[in-house]
Length: 338
Picture 1 (cartoon, rainbow, N blue to C red):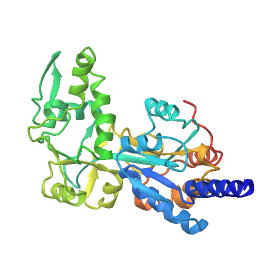
Picture 2 (cartoon, rainbow, N blue to C red):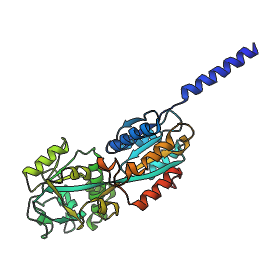
Picture 3 (tube, rainbow, N blue to C red):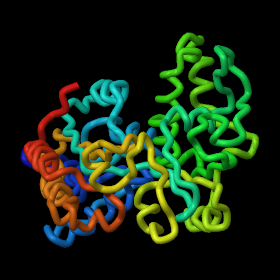
Picture 4 (cartoon, rainbow, N blue to C red):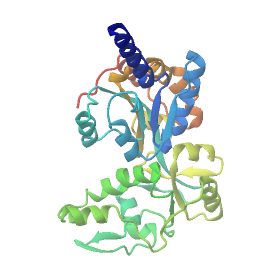
C-alpha cells in the first residue's frame, strides 16, 4: 500500500511539473517595438530551431505591469519598450520577486518634424515648438491662451508661415515621446512656469492647443504624407522610419541646427531620440529554454548591425562601440543596478 501511495505521489509531482513547464518564450511588447521583436523572434526560431515565442502587443504601461507581475512560467520572460524602465516600475518588479533584470539598449528611433520637400526651410528649438503647440503659454510673466498664429510671431528668424502641425494619435509611442522629450522638457525651462504649482504646471506642459494649429490624425502615415504634399505650410510629427521611407517627397526640419540621420542619432547629436530597450528576467534563465539564444540573436550584427534586418524596419543602430558593450552586458545577463 505504501508503495502505491508513494508511486501515486511521484506521478502527481511529475504531472504538476509538466503542467508548469514551458518550452517557448513569452514576450510582451509595446506597439512601436512589436515589429522589431517579431523579426528577432522569427529569426531566433529559424536559426536555433526553437519554438516560436509568443508575443503579446500592448501599451507600455500594461507591458510593464505584466512583466513585473512575478516570477515563473505564468509570467513573461522579456519585455520590449520605447523608453527605459522608471524607478517606480523597477520597485514594482522587485516587490513581486522580479529582482534580477538585465537591461539591453538595442538601438534608437528618432522623432522627426517632416515638411514638404522644397518648402520653407527653418531651424527650430524645443522652446519654439512648445510655444507653437501649447494651449497656454507664458508672455511677459503671465500665462495666457496661445496667441501665436505664425512661426515668425514666436521668433522673427522663423518663417512667416502659419503654425499648422499634424501629429499621430495620443496613444502612440511617437506622440508620447514628443510630449516628454519636447513639450514637457521645454516647458520646465521657462521661468514663468517653473514657479507654478506642480499640478498646474504639469497641465500646461502637456496640453496641446485646440484652435486648429495642432491636429491629431487618426489615420496612417500615408495620409499624413499626402497632407504634407498638398500644403507646404504643414509640418508633421512622425518616426524617423516613416520619414526615411518617404524622403523623396519629404524633408526634415532641423532641431537645434541638427538634421536627423543615422549618424546624428547614433551620436546623440539630434535632440529628439528614443532609445529602444529590451528587459530580460535573469531568474528565468534556467526555467525557460531559449532565453540566452534569443538574447544572442537580438544582439547579433545580422539583427541590429548597420546592415541588419532590423534596420530595414526603421531601427537606427548604435555605434559599433555601444553595440559591443551592450552585447557583452546582454549575453552576461548583467543585472540592472538600480
